[in-house]
Amino acid sequence: MSKVLDESTRREVFLSLVSLQDGGVAVITSREQVAASYQISVSLVQLIEREGLRKQWPPLNRDQRDALPDVLVGQADLATLRAAEKSE
Image 1 (spheres, rainbow, N blue to C red):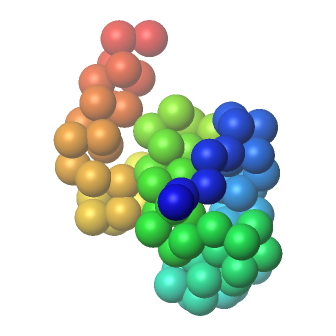
Image 2: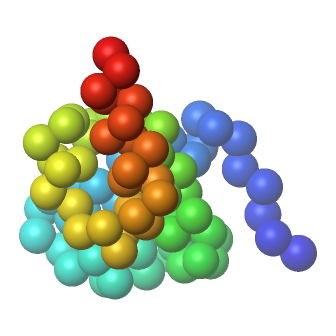
C-alpha cells in the first residue's frame, strides 16, 4: 500500500530534495535520501518532484526551471510551464 501525503508534506519533500541537490548531492542520491527520510518510495519522491516542478513550488525560480533538462520535467510539462509564462 502506498503512503498518501498531504500537499504540505509533499512541499516539504520537494524542498528537502531541492536543498540537497543545491548542496551538491547527486539527483539519484538525493531522491534516495529523501525517500529514506520520509519513509516513502523513490518513485513517490519522483512524482512529488515532478509535481513541484509543474506547480512551481518554491524555491524554484524561472532561471532554475529553464536550466532543467526536459527529461527531468517532462517535455509536455515544460511546454505547459513555458506557455503559461508567455500568457502572463
